[in-house]
Image 1 (cartoon, helix red, strand yellow):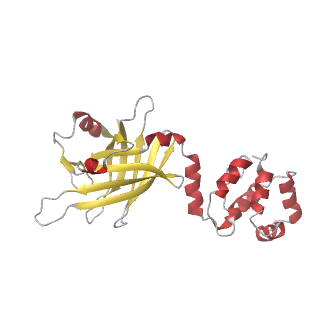
Image 2 (cartoon, rainbow, N blue to C red):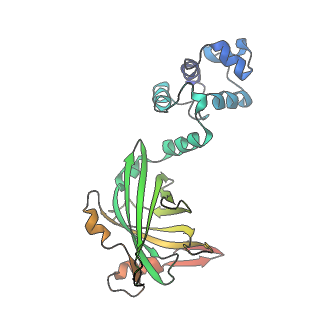
Image 3 (cartoon, rainbow, N blue to C red):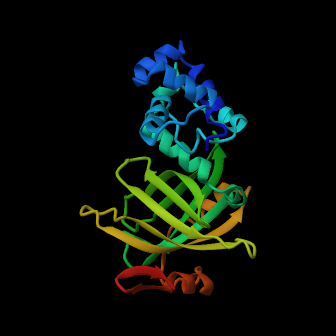
Amino acid sequence: MREFFPSNLKHLCRHCRSISEVCRKLKIHRGQFNKYLRGNSFPAPFNLKRICDFFGVEEYEIALPTEQFIRLVSDRKRPTTLSLVTAPQRAVEHLRQRSSPQLQSLVGYYHEYGYSMSDSGHILCALVNIHEADGHFVYERNERLKTNILGREDELYQYRGVAYYLGDRLFLIDYESLASSEINQTILIPSFKNRNTRLNGLKMGVTACDHRTPVCSRVVWDFLGKDVCRLNAYRRVRLYGADDQEIDADLKTRLSQTQIIDGLFQMV
């Protein structure tokens, strides 16, 4: 960690008026700070955290090779100094840095199948699109709940979220963008031993009814391709009966392979 710290610290200080100003705001003696810059001394954990918090970087980031570190901080938008980067922004950036590049291979369109959280006993098919934007992997999920009530329009839901690939699992967090009334998390299990045509996982959210009950559902993502006709793909987005012949046997089997084991809702 000590190898690149001095040069990275020098780079951060260039975003401030002077070394003296940095020392004054950090309340670190100038002589001690100069030892950090020369590499003659390394900050104690307390001072290291103060320095990183001041400049808006993480402790693991300030130890990165200098060229990589400069690219990282240059990509961040800041009006004046790095200290204006907020804690939530640092958290998101930390996840982005840790997310595996294998996520690139999962970009594209999917049909998501899972038992509906609001219409008991029905299988809901949604359309999902994972793509890259501004250095992050984001996605949109569109749902349509068809109704049979005369004069009542279908209920449409659109979710927007961000995806991370951590520890061989695909983590997806989204919110309902029209009403902004809920947040969902989905965890999928890719397998790179063969083509990822279908991904198994679990999704946790709340029901759309008034009591907003928290629920967890088994889901299956069926890969459609990286470039598809959205109109044709959207035609399949709706509710299906559990015994509907349009839901093939493989999907039904995957959706049924969930049990409560030792009090935990697990895939089996």
